[in-house]
Image (cartoon, rainbow, N blue to C red; front, side, top):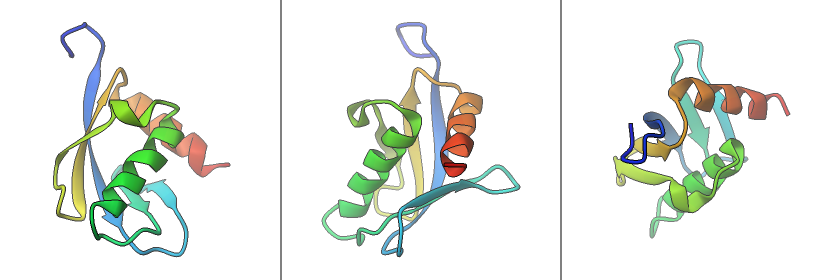
Length: 97
C-alpha cells in the first residue's frame, strides 16, 4: 500500500525494443511482454514503454516509474493506485482492441 492508502503494484515486464509495432501481451504464464519500435538508445525505449503502458492503463505517464532494470530488457515498474489483477485486466482488454 502506498502512503495515501491506495494500492500500489510492482509489475515485471519483458521489453523488446526495435519491434515492427508497439504491442503488449500477457503470456499464458501471466508474464507481461511489451514490444516498442524505439531503439534502446538514450532511454527512448524506456520512455516509449512508459507512454504506451500508461495509455493501455488509462493513467498519466508521470505516475509510472521504472524502479528496476532501467538498462535491461527485464523491467520492474511501480504502478500506483492499481492492483496487479486490475493491471492485467486492462492489458488484456487493450490486447483485444
